[in-house]
Image 1 (spheres, helix red, strand yellow):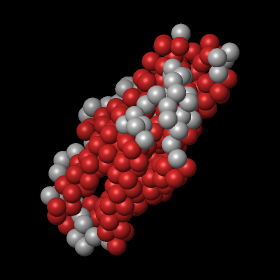
Image 2 (tube, helix red, strand yellow):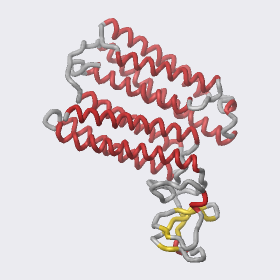
Image 3 (spheres, helix red, strand yellow):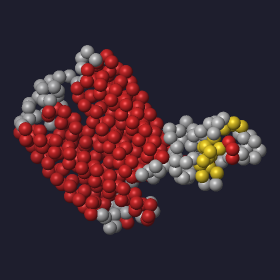
Image 4 (cartoon, helix red, strand yellow):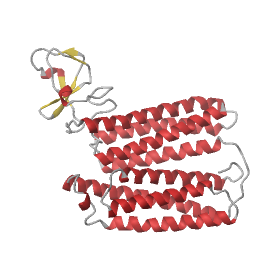
Length: 342
């Protein structure tokens, strides 16, 4: 049962990272409003593929909540009914959460797949919650954390709804991203405490402090990155999606701070690597940390000097999330060295 539990924790973690990657692709492609309602998409469980599916039709069976586009505005069916030969506005209500009423099949299906991954992640964490009852006698925190994650996924779904309802307000997107990292951290800790116990060397106080500072700096770096990304989004809206070379011309001051800050993050983690190596501490996780930092830097260079090559933006965010996860997992081992093996 223990191995099955850890397997599902791992599945949940992979799916949550998949949602983070999908969310980054949604933002890169401008697909955030591909489904303008929530949790359905234009009122459908399986979204439409053509614009004509959203036109009003005579002698057609409509279901409550189904959406059509009339005069460039969304209309929602008040109840189940069959339409007559003429449009009857009494059967319909205005969609009032926002005024976005554009259909783009690519954007719709990218956003739908993002939601589908989120739903699968939610189901996986629900399985973890169910299996955690068998871990109660072994470690009560496993049950508590498992259900905290389940409720966290529910809260994250609600945050996704607020993002859509707000027509993609930037600060709500940022909160949505932060909550995803919180869930990643909780899943990693759950994976850690459910693992075989082995003794490790006890790092010095200075090493532990450096590990904490390194994680905090990464979080600051991610926060600055979201603000730079917001600036880029505004530039895209102003200049168009084809003007890649102008998105950071001129770049805001925060971009240069964000770029220079990466040197500090790198230097601190390299120092942490050598301190751990000196005491013969297992370095597998630390290699992963340094690898993610390297990939972060490479994608950052590509975006700035090569005008945002395709996929570099979502990869940059994904690598940052993986870096956060690796640093968090390292911290769990460093602060409880007698409990596990990296």
